[in-house]
Figure 1 (cartoon, rainbow, N blue to C red):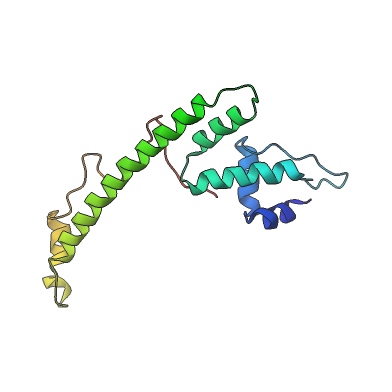
Figure 2 (cartoon, one colour; figure 1 turned 45 degrees about the horizontal axis):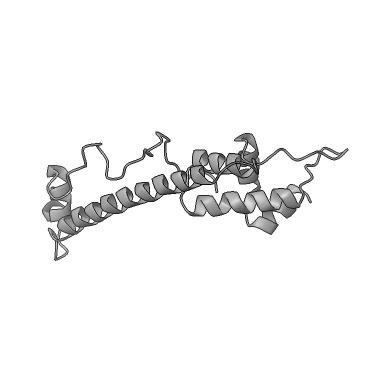
Length: 157
């Protein structure tokens, strides 16, 4: 199948498929005489696995590691368990951060209960002063690092 057919079969944008190929997550497809990529069932299965991992907010490095283990039939699954345990911990940390962020936003929202002019807006004043919405020590509300040191990014897919 051509890249458009793979995209349709997996509900993945063609740019994302090419990106996964460049990142080494999806093996390069052989080319036809007219230079079209030709994908097979293995590509569909692998792309479905990648997309499922990404839907679970796994980083590309985590996906890469899972694929490496999957591609070695004699590998033990202890590494998979370890990787998932780390990811679960990361999600737990993010949940705490999101709850704190919600509290900060609610405190800001409570500063302005009736619509009025912008110059009298308690929310804008709170943002200016930093009241009720102090950033975390990292300087932002959500951590963007993972316990393996990987920058967490949604990126394509």
